[in-house]
Amino acid sequence: MEILKWLKETKCQIVAMESTGVHWKPVYNLLEQEGIETIIVNAQHIKAVLGRKTNTEVHSDYRL
Image (tube, rainbow, N blue to C red; front, side, top):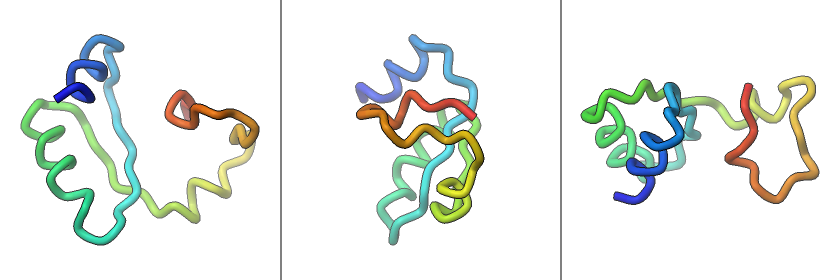
């Protein structure tokens, strides 16, 4: 999978993802099998983080 390759190339240590229905489960399982720490977050909590960038096109580059 391209996402796994990219995460490993960028030495990503933690992935936070929103749970939407059941669509997150296969991705979570894959990341867990690869040893990448993955946390499931409530989107409303993330939106309330102070200093969160809102004017960027690439939201995946935001680091907490």
